[in-house]
Length: 232
Image (cartoon, rainbow, N blue to C red; front, side):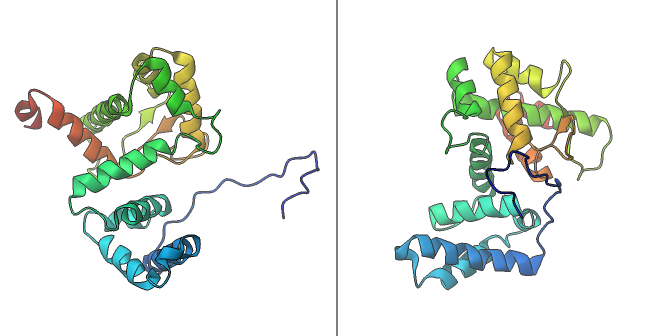
């Protein structure tokens, strides 16, 4: 149990990864999700079962089901479905919205003074479109590097934290402020989002699923003037 709040000694907890959901747990999540939303919003009461069935059918799409076992990604899909009353039919649109939600998770909206993403963008006079282009290029470079190393097509690229090609240096160049970049790196390490550390204390980051890496890399490729040559 948690120690009394007045106890000066902080409780110690083991840090462990959350297990992926199997099919019965995914189904249970979709049902529980709309039960809770209906508890919070009286307008949804009486529709919980139908909405849960619709969500469960939507995430069974071949492009989404492989990610549905990840609790964080399943929650993001459920958020998108609840917001739009459906999951977009276009796969790229689903990923675009998931990327937006995962990026925003780096800011703690309940603590306004702890919003590193907002601070980084405001200080650098950048917007979220600029950040999205940065992340797309980051994914493209990581994807290309891993392909050059001969890794399997399902492997996730390792993005180092330090070094001249590391995330910290690239973010510092993006925003022109190393301190702000370090602040965002700290948030990335502490909160689930679009970049995650595969192991506690790891000095590398990865995208939460191979499909995010591929989607962002493809988005960068599509923006290049020599798209046709690069694609070949």
